Length: 443
Image 1: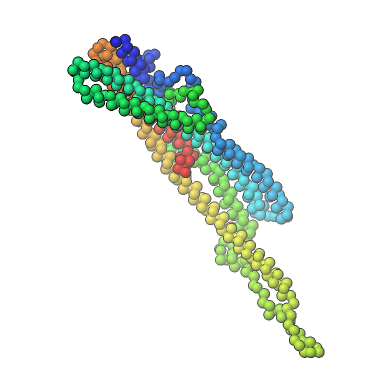
Image 2: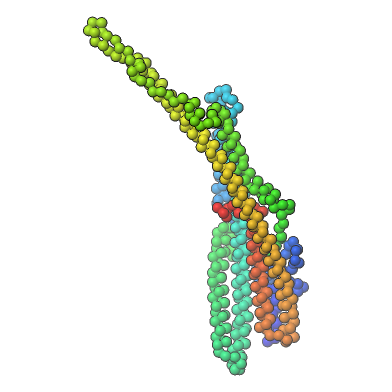
């Protein structure tokens, strides 16, 4: 009996104490840059699927990324076509000043920037996939750990139940104690069943995203924790990151701003709208009476009125009206363009302000999480010492197995707590290092 109990103790303590040297599983010192978390509950028969392998598989399996590649190629093809269009326009226009040439070149320049921006978006999409897959991977691991913990609790409660039944037979406890423990065990079993169903759903979706047969893999339960610190001021760090994120938005803005200026110069638009409209010179419709010519027949004396030149004047008037309307329409488009440029400037600046505030807030949360992690690490070191002492006490018969089991469960709770904190920490760290993840989640 003692040999079997010792075997159970050895399994339980293996969750929180390294069997090789009895050091804490969460071996780390406060303020240390890295820590490593691991458990001994993983299957050794399957290949370990690492986070990076899962990320690579998801990227290779992403239809959105493949479509984005086609979008990039579309822009590259359109650039070639637009170059031909620009050349043809310049040939037809003949001698053009520099502003007019820049107006013609704008669609070509814009396509080049858009193509580069789309490539950047594709890289951001890969970062988003990495972030999503990592979060889901860690969520699966946490669920597996939670199931292992619940199963271990069932084992402990089952042992407790057997002891209670024996005591009940000896008249040392009442029936309700036995019934209460039985209900607790059933609740734990129901919890395990629910979590196993949830785990299956999570793995099924993960398998869809990665196109991997997860039956061939087990998940890596180790978890690296590396603290992050911003070098220099946070304002400088955020500014540099946002410059990277908005690089092509700024290029498009500058190109559009220059284009609006070139349109104004090439068209010789007046700064004042009323003056410009007046400069367009609205045509006056010719009056038929102004073209009237009356003649009298020499024999009969009958008068006849004709309007020589009136039809030609009407034709010219219609042409002038069309030209006038075209001038107004073009000018209206220029006003829209001018406003669009101003609007894009405000949009970029406001987005930068919002993201700056968000990143600073995330960094504050990150520092707070570091403190929480350090506190849990201290609790883990204390609990591991308590586990070692509790095992020694139990081996010497100085404490009950129930007391020892409670210490084991406390260690498991700390394990889960630390994993959750580190997962949250890494999510925040990724968003601070890659602000486009923040923008993506906001959208």
